[in-house]
Amino acid sequence: MRTKPRWRGLGGPAWRLWGWPVGLGALTASGLLSALVSEAGGDAWSWFALGVPVAVMAWFSGRRAAQRQPLPAAGARR
Image (cartoon, rainbow, N blue to C red; front, side, top):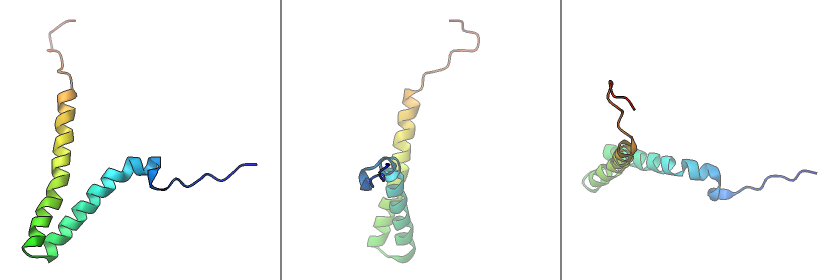
C-alpha cells in the first residue's frame, strides 16, 4: 500500500528554487505600485525596491563574468 506524500511546507525544494525570484518579484511590484500612487516617502521606497533587483542582477552577472576563463587567441596552440 502506498502512502500519500507529505506536504513539506515552505522548506521544500520548490520554495528553495523559487523563493528568491518570487521575493524579488514582490519587491519590484511593490516598488512600481509605490511609484505610481504615493508621494515623498513612497518615492524613496520605490527607488529602493526597484534598485535592489537591479543590484542583485549586477552582482551575480559580475560574479559570473569573473568566473569565466579567457578564450585562447585564434592562432595559439596548446
